[in-house]
Image (tube, rainbow, N blue to C red; front, side, top):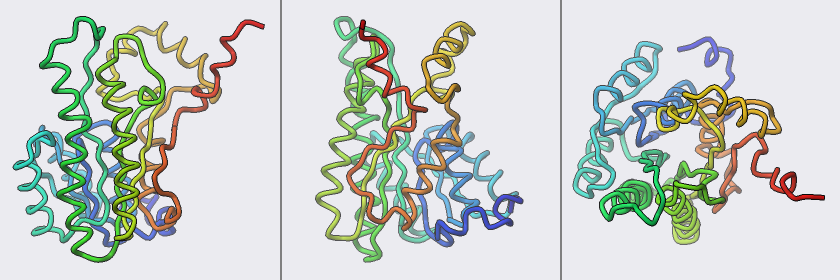
Length: 269
């Protein structure tokens, strides 16, 4: 394993041997989360529509001494999710931790968005997490050992963004889905929380940062003085996956460098 793991940096999380499932794990936040969970000793299933990408991440983890498998899935297709869940259980064991990270984004105003674009956003970003939570949550219930479900939301789920209505709406719905799961699954020892990124460079947001001036202006808006990284998100997800966060349930944690707290700066005085 990496020097970071050998130094005991992740031992306190207590994730050794846990089966962790990460959707959209082929790149970006999902891939970094899979790496961190593996370094913490978890057995990781990397689910993605791009099997080649997820296989690359799994291979990287195995070369470093970890345990990982790559599984194809389309989270919007119930049968595909059920098949993936069966493969994970058969290969690694029942799921202990689910990270609902897979997402799509459509840019454009709501007045002109097509029905297909709207339905795709809701199918992947909202129905997908429900389907995955049902399939893997059932494994947690049957296993009787509790578990943790972490949904990757967005600051856009808290605050509307121009030309991002379908994405913002789906991410806002994801927060309520998580809250509902927290209420309904708590009797089984299963927690549900949201990690909401602010400005983070990922393949999904890469086009935004192609303009250096846009990046400069975004950095100037963040109190922490930088754009977030996938590691910033992965570390929070790993914490919520662990029993160290056992009293954190039904929450949405903004990992945004403080940008969500700057609204009053815009108010004339």
